[in-house]
Image (cartoon, rainbow, N blue to C red):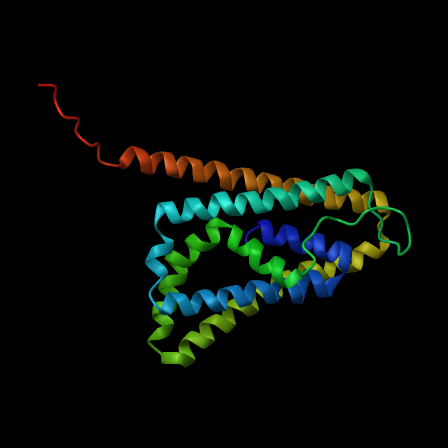
Length: 211
């Protein structure tokens, strides 16, 4: 529940489309992705997520996705946005489906996969001792804590959007877009550094001596 791309998207969707998009639908996409991941972790994929090159690949691809979304939101904000129906003004460049966005933005975050490869893996292992009921209880509790936070944020933004002028709305979406660009830059730079360290750690192949 630390500030990150998903929270930024929550604010953006709630500001443009209301509580349902920024809260329940966005969280649903996030929850469905994590359900699939829990199943994969139970199948033994957990250690793969902790490999540096896997994390770097997620960082590069995810960073590119967030950069595209952030650039689109910022450009739309600069062009001028309006919440009033029928008024001229663009719409924030968000994915059409908040459910899809919840899954894509979560998957785009390399720290999300790292959490599941370390802390999440341990929680799944502990809950597995109580069989299916234990895993289900862990998953449901984890999702309820996420939902409580994002529903609160989405509700506050959705209520407040009715009172803000279009200029303030454009600023809000623009700031969210810039935050996504900043997250994208961090993810991409982190991935490049990880790949550079991994390449330096590779064993050097001895060159045959002349003669």
